[in-house]
Length: 312
Image 1 (cartoon, rainbow, N blue to C red):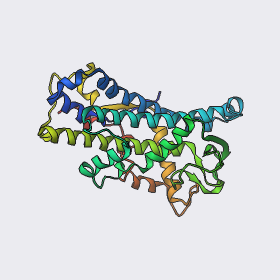
Image 2: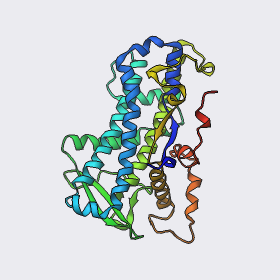
Image 3: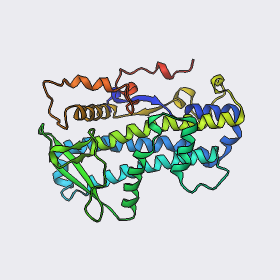
Image 4: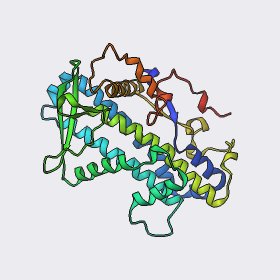
């Protein structure tokens, strides 16, 4: 493993867990809640590495020719990424349900969450649920056999080997929404598999960061706590790890993830072409790092620096 490809990124749950440890330590005795708090990181890493694996696989033409002639390996990895996105979203929702239960029976989770977001996260783009509704629709159809995920092994306009895909319903209509970040107009608008899931990994991480801010705001407001006064205790040892580790997740393969993100952004500014244009320097992609949904890039793209996450 290349150690420079291992970076630490902020744990979206950290402030919420710190708050619970400070004001609601009894809630942390809930074994189900602890299980969910711990597993959200595990499933996010599985999604992250599976996305990177799609990038690795597409460049290994010998492997694809030997083991993926019927596209089963590619299809399985694509479907797995859909499952992980939905699993992570469901875990986040369940944590919210346990900590801030609704007084009335929730009939529609989307409407329930959107009402929360209007109160505590108005104007926050990551909390728009449109992107997730589309992903979950495809995931549900995969589970119930109402969709066909079709991978394609082909080359892009730079000559590089790629894994593309489409998700078709029974009427052979494509269910994936088009995006300049992953749609390839030169090949009948099919999707770059690695770029597609890299974008949704970015979206999901941004969502988790802001979602748990909403949960924290709702919980602290309900109990009249000033979260600006939260501080780390020397005795803060939940899950038997040190504070520095609790503040962040360690991710490997960040070099691959950065490269895919850069290529994805460049595709969007180069009118759907992969081959670099002399009128559009590739370096333009870094201008996008500060914009939604690429919040991960400020931790992944820079030289290794953990100073932001060390205890004061």
